[in-house]
Image (cartoon, rainbow, N blue to C red; front, side, top):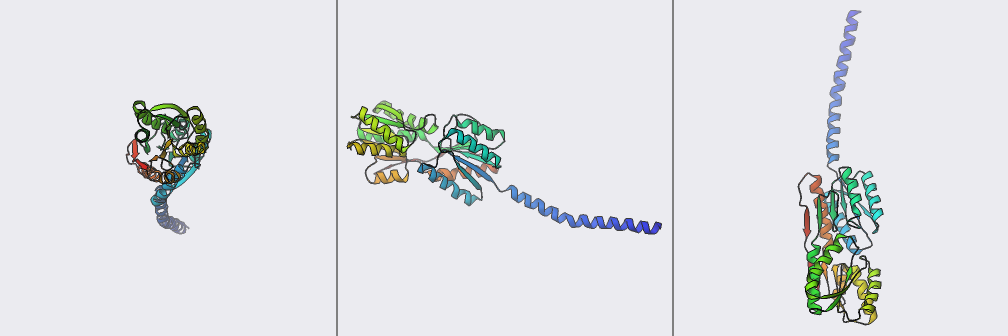
Amino acid sequence: MKKTGLWVIVALISALMIACTTESPANDSNNEASGEENGDYTVGFSISTLNNPFFVTLQEGAEEKAEELGIELNVVDAQDDDSKQVNDVEDLIQQGIDLLLINPTDSSSVITAIELANAEGIPVITVDRGSDGGEVVSHIASDNVAGGEMAGELLVDLVGEDAEVAELEGIPGSSAARERGEGFNNVADESLDVVTSQTANFDRAEGLSVMENILQGHPDIKGVFAHNDEMALGALEAIEGSGNEDVVVVGFDATDDAVNAVENGRLAGTVAQQPVLIGEEALEAAEAVLNGEDIEEFIPVDLELVTE
């Protein structure tokens, strides 16, 4: 009986050793699979509005680069609604994103969304428009102040020193509106007579209606600078409808519609931001951050002036 018991114990020990040896490769395989999974990144991208062709093009640039880099990109449209953007970011965080790209509807209200990501340890990169607060790893955009100055200098060349002009401003509080306006007025304060500056919220329909009112109140204006092409095209429609073809309009963004209008001699010029490149740079910066690399706090994208 004692010998039989001993053999049973030996058999049990042998079986356990075989089981452990058999299980080890499976565990190694699981660890390797887990390591590969950790290399797959998901990036959330909250865009202010996809009702603007500029941001549609920016999205396309980001999506193409994400596919090239093997990054899963989840894009959401805030529809120019501050509250919706915050809710969208909350949803992206719940989905388990590794990094947040955000194009703010407004540079102040976006702070709440950025701080939500900060609280979860999710790095944030702002795109095209900056934020007034929250922790941001990097900001990717054109130099809007320089672009505003380019537009102002073009307008001076076209209408002459001290001519009466109007300014159509973007969404109040957005960094793009502030910076483009700053650049334009750096030039205009010395060389032009800006008789009115009114917001049209980066919107074509509002650009039309605001410009109609400006023409009634200031029939002698010679030029208009609009903070984006959508407003510029709306203003152009109002000017053409009034029959006053002597008023020249300069826009900002170089959207397809605006470039066509320049080529057709309707729009005097537009500042090209290269939205595809901005989208590409955003994804490249995201990959660098997720791989633990240091990147610049501001990554500028070159501008150019589009004229006839």
